[in-house]
Each structure stands twice: as structure tokens, then as C-alpha cells.
Length: 592
Image (cartoon, rainbow, N blue to C red; front, side, top):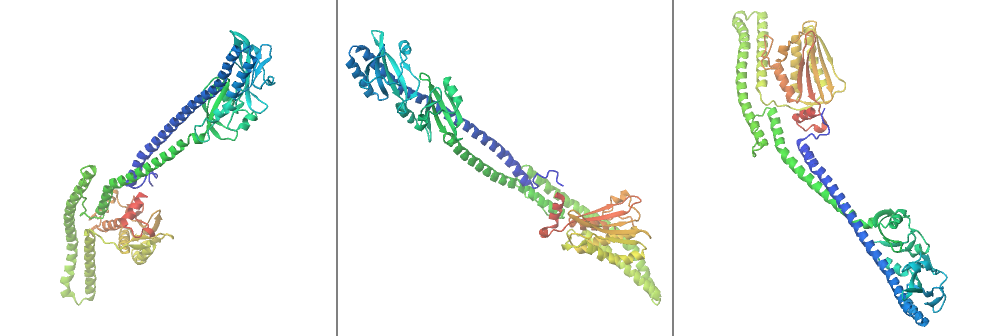
């Protein structure tokens, strides 16, 4: 079981994952910060520009109003000079009406309220007009509240004093139509779907792109904006209209008239460049991430290539191939590692030569010892044949003895050859362990009866196939059973059982004979180690080598007054992996 399942298994994947994290995480964080910073900068710029626009627009509105007032005030000054000449006063008033159409119902009125001259050619003062005499006497100008005239146009009453030699002789009053201011407000354009709105101190619309809103005497819906205007604030805000559309607005008061001018633009239109910037920024970030991933992949492959070479060379070394050598083209840590590996191979070659010489010496000594006793016995029978060739019982015993000794020589030499062979060729194929065990145990039951030993076989019903050389596995099983017979006294028991555990399957041989002492248990798989009087001590060494070449393990347990167990574990054969090598199966089992 892997300690950290979320960590990639292969080295190049780990390098790729690390490089990708080190590049992508800072890139995404940096990109997000830059996008947010740019968005705030754009929002501040838009807000500042809107403030400048509304300030300039209020100046234009005030300029339009001041123009009408200055014309009215100039006419009042003329009337002060022409006070005694009614005809000339009327001419001046009519000229003012013709010159500035926004001024309507212009009348010169004396202090008793009698009209002296009117732009309506002698008509009376319009009933809608009211004159605040106190205001006219105390101030230079008087302006009434906005009201809707009978022709549905918002108007205000403007009154200025008429002075003669510094004394107020009357007033000049007129209705000022806001239609001219409508034109000024409608000309305020600063972006797609933008609009400008003029309101009075109560929030009523005085100028609006939709004139019906003015004629209906409708109100601006946001009280916070009206409060800010009354307090003389020039601000920007984001508001929702009655339809739920989001707008960004800027507003500024016209203090002398107690009016306020509002410029507004749909939020999406005002900040369309922000959305475009986000789109382009994320495209750039994604492109950078893809480029970083490609570069990380190339770097990971380049960095892991020497490791793959090392793994391949190590596998060949594990198979006993000492001819492997790694090319060295670099002087960094990888180059030094390859150099150390090649140096280790060279030492292993020397150690193999020493081991071979040692094996040859041990083999020669063992063979000499075995052959010496056997040859003495054979020589005795051969020397007696000329004298006792007519003795049938002797001849039969001699032939059996000589044949048995020759078979022993053959077995001994075959074991020596198997152990000395560096490359054991395996004919791999799917093998059913149950069938193999049943085949061997059929031939063993007769021997069990001869030795008066109880022999038991237990097979698992559902046992997966393994990839193995069937003949070599039979050799291992026969060797383990033979050792069990030699270690089990009369009346003892031998058990052969097959099993499966996860991704491994195998068999075990158990006997109730004499246990193996711990000192010997640690050496039973060493070549030429034996506690018997006969044999070379190669059976278990050869068996373990065969099992290891199959990618498995051969284990042994033995405790005092408990059965001795030899267990063989082999990787399960998988169909889709059938073309893979045995060592790949072993690597999968270990990493899993």
C-alpha cells in the first residue's frame, strides 16, 4: 500500500507535478492580482471622468441660465433709464422677448403692481406669475420654484429690480422656460446609452431624455443622491433603476438654483473594457499555463531519463547481467551516480569471479567427498563380480546399488550445473498451481505410505493463474516435499496447501518433523549449507533462485515444537499483462 496515494508513481510525473505547481500557482495568483488592480484602476478612472463630465455639464446649464438672467438684468437697467417713456419700455421688453425666446411673459411692473410694459403687447401680467416684492426689494434677483406652465413646459419666474438713480422704481419679471436647458442637457453625451438628468431640490425631473418623465412630474428614485446634492456633494455611485438595470452615475449640485445634474451610463457599457481586459488576460494566463506545462513536461522527461536508464540497468543487473554499463555524458550528481554504478558493476564482476572460484573449490571438495564414499562402494561390488557373478542375489544387489549410486552422481552433477548457470532460461506460460500440486502429490502418496507418513493436500477452489515455467516449479515443489520427507519421522504428517492473497498466489509445504534451529534457519538457503550426511546443500538454494527468477519469494518458518513451513509466493498472471516481462510483474506487485 502506497504511503501517499495522491503522489504520482513515476519520477518524471513527480518532477512535472512539482514544476507545474511552482509555475502555475504563482502565475494564477499574479494574474488575478493584476486583473483586480487593473479593474480598480479602470473603475477609478471612469469615476473621475464622470465627475469631470458632470462638473463641466453643470457649468453649461448654469451658463444657459445666467445668459437669460443677464439679458433680463440688462433690460431692467435700460428700463430704469427709460422710466418715463412707456412706449420705449415696451419696445425694449419686446426686443428682449425676440432675442431670448426662453424668456416669456416679460413685464415691467411699478411698485403698485401696475404693468407698465409687457412682451404680450399690452396684455396683463400672466395669472401664473407671482411677484415677491420683499425679495425684489432686498436682493438683486429672485427666482421662484419650478412649476409646470399650462403648455406643460417647466418654468421658473425670474424677477429683477428696476432702479432709477439708485432707487427701486419697479421690477422686471419674466417666465423662464426650461426648454433651452433641455437642449443643453440632451447634448451631454459621453458614451453608449449615456444620459443626463436635471432634478430640482425635491428630486423632480426638470430635464430628462424621456420628456414624458418631466411632464408626468416624476421623481428621481434614489433618496441618497438627493441628500448628497442638497449637501453640495459631487460623487459617483452605482445604482439600480426600477427595472433592475445597473448604472454608474455621477452627480453635482447647481447651488444657486438648488438643482442637481446627474449623468448616468449602464454599468456594462461603462466597464466593457474591463470585461474585454478580463477575457484577454485569462487567455494570456491559460496560454502561459499551457506553455509552462509543455516546458515542465520536456524538463521532467529530460531529468527523469537518466533515472530510467538506471532502472533498466538495475533490472538487467538483478537478472544477473554484469555486462551492463551506463554512458556518462555529464559531470553533475547524475554523472557521478552513473560512475558509481559502473564502479559497482566492476566490483561485482570481481566478486563474481572470486565467488566462482570459491564455488569451484567447494564444489570440488563436496564432489570429491560424495564420490569418494560412493566409489568405494561401487569398487567393492565391481571387484567381487568376477568371484560371485553366479550368485544371482549378489548380482541383483550390485546392479541396484551401482544404478542408485550413478543416479546420485547424475543428480549431484545436474544440481551443480543448475546452480552454476548464470542465465536460467524460463519457458513462461499460464500455470494452474492446483493442477501442478495434484500432479506431484499423486506420485508422492506411495512414498508417504512407504515412510508411514500421513500426507495431506488442500487446494483453493478459485485460484488465479500465474506466469511461470511449469517444469521449474515442479522442481521446486518436488525438492520441498523431498526435504519434508527427510525431516519427518514415522507417524508424522506432511501438508501441501495452495492459497491466494491479493495479487499473489502460491503453495506451502508443512511438516511435523524436527524443527530447524534459528542459527541454521538463517543459512538454509546458502549454497552448500547442509545438516545432512549426504548431499551438496544446493536444493534450497536452487529452489529459491528459481522462485526469484519468477518474481516471487520463498519463505521458511520453524519454531520449537511447531511445524516447519516452506512457502512459495508468486505474482498472479493478468491477461492484459501477459506480454510483459516477469520483472515488470514483480515491480507492479511491489509498488502496489
